[in-house]
Amino acid sequence: MKRKKLGKFWTAVLTVFAAAVFFAVPAWAAETGADPAFEMDGSTLVKYSGSATHVQIPDGVTAIGDRAFAGNTTLSAVSIPEGVTEIGQESFYRCANLRILNLPESTVSVGSRAFAGCGRLLDINLPESIAEIPDGAFSGCSGLRSVSGGEGVRRIGTEAFWGCSSLSGFSIPAGVTEIGQGAFSGCSSLTAAVVPEGVSVLPDRAFQSCTRLSEITLPQGLAQIGGSAFADCVSLRSVDIPDGAQLGEGIFSGCTALETVSLPRNITAIPARTFSYCTSLREFILPESVTEIGQGAFRSCRSLASVEFPAALVSIGDQAFEGCTALRTAVIPGNLHTLGTQAFAGCTALETVRFSGYLAELPAECFAGDTALRSAVLPASLAAIGERAFDGCTALTEVYIPQTVTSIGDGAFPQSTVLTGAENSYAQTYAQSSGLAFRAAEAPSVPEQPVEPAVQGSLAIDTEWHRMAPGDLYDIAVSVSGMDGRELRVYSSRDGIAQVTPLGNGRYRVAGRAAGTAYIMFEVYEGDTQITHASVRIEVAPGADRAGERGNNVSYFG
Image (cartoon, rainbow, N blue to C red; front, side, top):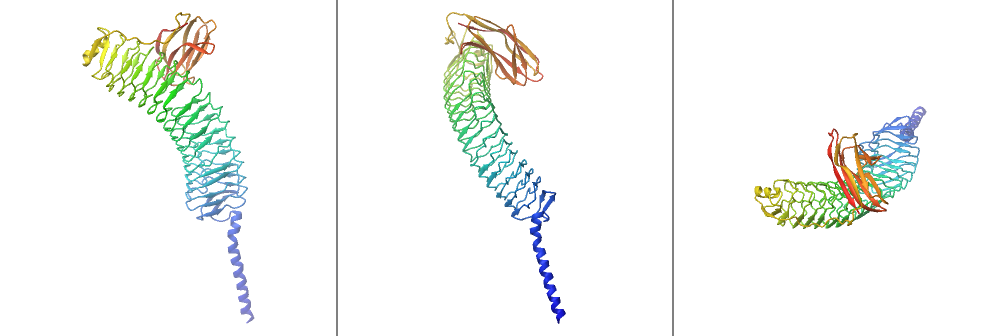
């Protein structure tokens, strides 16, 4: 009887001991990483293969490896203990249901795309020990509402917060000096942003498609704003760009609420698509330093009624003002050398256009579809009028063609337009061959640029334009007179394309650097007042044969 009782006693003891051991295993495994769900390599958590919704990473772990939790769709909360210093690349990539996650104060580095695609992640507090928010760190975290902390952050990587469409609570840390391309692109709930003073370059697409962004503060030391930096920010109304900043292409394209922009002084170019589709922009005064307006720069600015062109302007690009349906008058300054295709096409309210100066060609469709155009005063220097230049300009009943014109393209004028010009001129021949009416007439008087009655000085340049390849050198000779108390300033409109260096004795060397078009500007100043200027167009293209035109490029001044 005693044996049976003793047997039962020891059986019970062994059962209790076995149960204790069994239930103790998970606690021990969590502390040491011996749980089979945690694959460890020393103190690095290499892979988690479990299916728990809430995971406590074991104490003693110092690093979470690359893609350790990647693609885990059951995970909703993770607790990371103090002592973890490194979180690897794509460590939580596409954990689609992850909502809660803490970063311990011990964290020093986070890998690229560490939390990318965690669409339900709500809030993040960044420890002060982190110096970088890496490339794509939170890209595609569409549910992320706020990011706090991060006082130690110095760099925000490329597309770090791309597509964080719910992010409204975030201030860029004051110590940040570098922001990557597309860092905040698609943050459609962000309403205001202050770019820290240490940032010198705002890169391409930095705030693109931040559709609720209405306020942006830029630092005074900003040197460059990249292409499409604020494109499609449809709530942005006003921007003050600091002096010295260079602009990329399309930086405000599609900013449909934009009404006022303060441009940097001494800016020389309005790049391509800078203000395209800015449908609330009503008037624009270009700085006197602007020499070039790029392709599509103001395209479809449907409220733009007034533009003041600076005297220094030498080039207007293709489609620069196409579709500006409120623009009524265009007075083109005398220094303009190049007008692009469809530059003013579809400007249905444009009534008057007036040229003077050196323009040699009106390109194809430059005023096509301008149904209200009634008066076009063409420059006396004009040699060619392109195909369909005034096609659809049904209100243009009469236009004088200068004797210098030797080429007019097909369909340049509506059949209802009467061409006027000198007897036996090319205009008469063209009218007869095209079935247009022609009337002999003298050239209309055109108000000239104001000049002093007495000529005291001159600026003569031996080159009109030049084509070259990157790496080529070309010398320009300049002669000036009447310079007492005056100063000649020479510079390139785009140093990155063509750089100019003085050689002495009135000679300047141009070095081709990269493909594109630049203008070498020659300006005569009396004090702070510019009294005359001239320019030489430089075209740089890989493998280009040397070509150009030497000639008397002369300006006179009183």
